[in-house]
Amino acid sequence: MELLGILLLGLGVLSVTVRAILTDGRGHTPDVRSTAPWTAGDLPSGPYASMRF
Image (tube, rainbow, N blue to C red; front, side):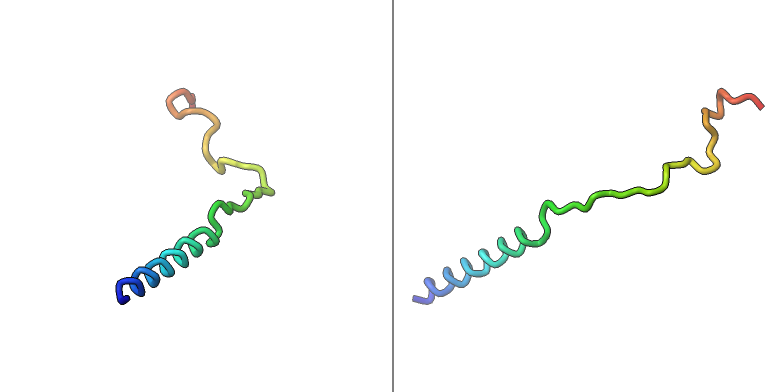
């Protein structure tokens, strides 16, 4: 009888754990939104090796 209680308790804990994992936002990734255009700041537009000063 004690073994049955332990098995039922383990099954309950396992089911609660699986439910928590599945409902915890799995697969939810918000869209990336950008309003400003991408800029490189003060970086040169070409490689340093090919630039002539």
